[in-house]
Image (tube, rainbow, N blue to C red; front, side, top):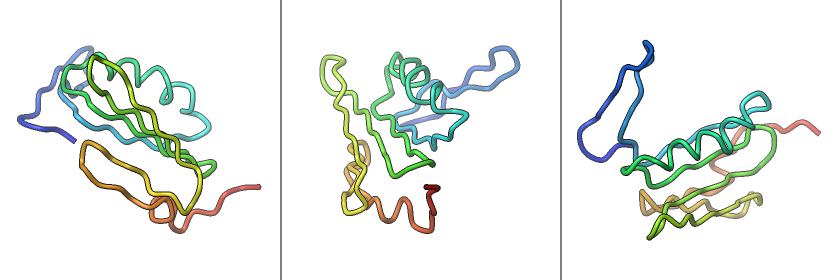
Length: 107
């Protein structure tokens, strides 16, 4: 999600967004390490960036990171289907059961 006009850079032939406010990513086995920590750290340096949400595809787990005042992060962890995930940037919440509707997890 972007507030305002989109700003891009084209470094090394890869176009990158410079002013995201909210990023939501689905994590898989192959992307878990990079998505969980490395990307959050990189996004956190952007002035416009407010919230990062990861949705795990392997088990019911949604983690939210919201940049509060003075650069402190508010972290939420949701792992029960009866919970609702707070998306502070959008001032809304979404039930875990809606996020994972139709998903069958491996044992």
